[in-house]
Image (cartoon, rainbow, N blue to C red; front, top):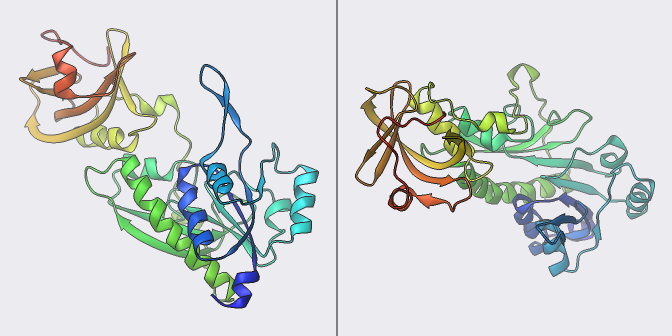
Length: 315
């Protein structure tokens, strides 16, 4: 690292675990992280104890200055950033920045997004890529502008999505690849050779926030579609079905080639294996959780739970 890079002021903005490796790689490479911005502490659990974001925990461990504004247009917050005069603002899994904030970076503000933009713009790109059966995705760094996830692309890196990979698996993979891309992007901006590739709105696809209605399994769908839904929502918030009024979350499934001879949603138990009829084939259930109980592998679940003949899920 040359002297210019060492002196450049970076403001890092992020919240969850996904953002921590990106912050860590900047710190470990000797960059001047002048301030970390994250969400305010939130009360959690029965005791409503204040919970810190993963980014805040990291910042505290490394003695980095922390800001936790309630509102990003707060005058004191903006004034602090103005006086700090950052060279670059790095955003990873944070909130939508107003122009008043991102325009304060002298060399630009950029975001790390977990898709190959312009595909999967929005809050849940990892989930939707898997739900939609994509075989490839990746990470993108791009300069911020007024519209969400639309700014000029700096760098991208593509990865394969394996056929049984869950959203949790892909999250962890992209988290590490994304950190390296953040480092590459910071170097490029400071050396004045960062690309600015315009996005095509015609090729854009949405990745909206996941709500409960997205998570309910319709057993009338094809097996492949249901399998993708399950892995695209695992481990959180998890695809679910119902059984006699109770919710069953399904975290892991396995495709079969066995054609159905029962109605969609029908349960078939063979020794320690559980199969559910879909529109075309049976889906093997590997991990599940009955409402109020622990998450279990199927063989453990079936030791304490007996489905009756002709039982159906989704009822």
